[in-house]
Image (cartoon, rainbow, N blue to C red; front, side, top):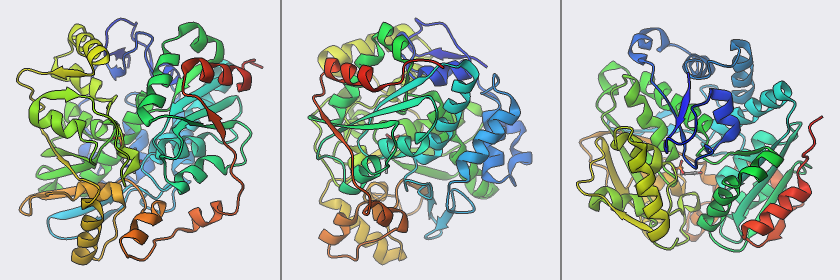
Length: 456
Ligand SMILES: *Cc1c(COP(=O)(O)O)cnc(C)c1O
């Protein structure tokens, strides 16, 4: 299977190459050139355990990896999860279920893709002999999950930019208290979007990319999307035949990576009733779905910081489908968006999507009301998913993080602080971080000075 860029100006590449590159050389995002029809496999896949399902699904795409390499990477990745089902479903009521995606080592859903990505990189390095430099921007959880997936991996140096003071103290500790010598957390002055745009700019510097073997762990990486499609499929299979096709997946959304991963299954013969894009007060996507206007605002820090995003990078992937694969039109929108910070679609239709937005004052209210009604504690990101759900419709809300990652939210709401032994351990370790300007030149110099560029 080959993967083509949304912008249509780079050559299609195989799975390993798309994963190693992250962003395509023309600045676009990789998508599969064609899609398998999963309908034929559903009967055989219903009973599979998570790692088996993951293997069966990914091998349809990762056709350039030997089966045993893929199998080992998957088994190794999900052995770090603390729940035997990996992604258990909890039933809150007849119409409302939660898919818990926080049983990985950093207690957020990003572990699903980043544990795997770490193991795929390791294989790629041993195969090619070329070291990799991982550069990413994080609003909190990606950094922690990427670092956890890449700690101590030989030949990999990791640079993670995050907005100083704008990630939760525990998220910061998850990135900075690792003791790993191949990890450099960079606290930048600015917002997540500033960090992300610097990362994008450095990726478009082709000689630099080549020189340090740059790869991306942001959700622009194809492997992240495909690894995340797996838990949608796993949940869908577990819903049972009568519920599958009438259940809406509710997805707390920032960069549009998670929800896009689920939507991709609808291209593979899987019927899903709908996807609800649940944003926090940074509601660029909610406005887009309601008005057809995609326009930047400034980021307002919120109680759900991993969704404090205005530029939803993965939206470009959906656009490619909305435009029927016309990459010229994708380029036109992305260029106009980059120059003017806005784009107005005529007759914007994104079939199968609905959206909501929860403000900061609403988040603790929702947490309390879900707890009162179901005796279940949601984290502030997951809480956004419970905004305005129709009581007569069936919903599966994706729970993207463990509440213990955000203790202050509960304390300020007069609730008991949730805890997790994994996080308690972090409090004992000394943090190591590097302060930096967000200017691409500053980051570039830092990376050049600290990455291991020599291939052994
Ligand atoms: C990253 C993250 C999100 C947003 O996911 P996207 O793929 O960026 O849409 C939501 N919740 C949590 C806890 C996250 O870490």
